[in-house]
Length: 475
Image 1: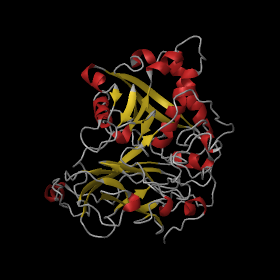
Image 2: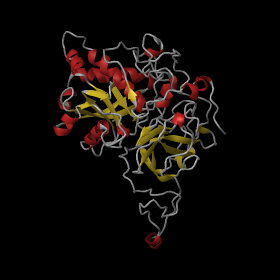
Image 3: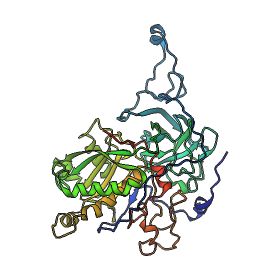
Image 4: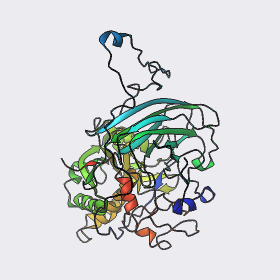
């Protein structure tokens, strides 16, 4: 069966789609101390009409028979040679690529390699067994072709019952529209409440192309993709979920992290982030503060190339450098830098959409936030409001966390592309650049492209709580 868009998704058509800045993932938010509108109330569990069934937690994507020592000695082994040596239908899985660090309660599934050929057809798919209703599953694709750069994105997502939630040619209207990016791509199963996450075998496939998903005609660029998935069981609706963070002060921005974590200003930031996300039952978990100093700290203090697809991308490089500080971490990496610019574009924050913590040294595990020296001077000025740091960076960090947990902007900056969640307000202004004044209602929401407030909807709550980046709160 094919999913047919209705409501808001039906209005978001390819004809009106933004030529998305897939190459940069630029999320610009204001930096001048916005007023917050976090709203009240608490997290309301989604009851829905789906049948809840206990399903055993699958540690593998296939049954594995026990063999005796003699059989094991002669069993074919994967040779990491782009051949299915062991005849299980997967190529170069089971240790041919380094797995991310995975915390207790989660599991990494290695889906091996897929080969893309220049044939007008969907890319090959792999099967991931979802452990049960509302389990958290983040999908991962990495371009290992070494054949030049191309955009990657989730092309196929088919539920156990056969319903297509992503398919070739329906990227804009897809209820599981996944962000396109270079070299690495991620997607959350259930990027809209329209996708009911149920247990069983899901078919997933990523494609590779030199055009944006809107312009894609269905013929992949030849190459190899490594696929995998981070999986965890459902976090019960009455349980608070936590996101662990490694906070890295790059070049001593705004001060060494060893000092920053002790300041009331940092505590105010964390307090504000938690206040914003309380409505969704989400909070900041364990925080480790580390410093990136030396030559790397000085080099990446100001990131002036965050959108290149090549090895000169400084945002990619700063995550690689930061990863060396915490090589065994299972947390997301939040880097604090003095600036994010690229060919005249500036950003107050950038984040992976549907991030995967534990992929140490990768953009897929990262968030970046600018701490401008002038603004920080205001934050520490006794004559300025004691909540200034929270008002500014609490909002920016909370916004980037929204992306990391799987949320698009409710409206992109030119108003031509919107998220795929029905209960978020849509601004229909036909202008070159949406502003807070033109979209005053929409700007009150945290995931507006330039938010003035911090409201989070029930639909957004349901999506974010599916992210395996979260764990049940506690020690």
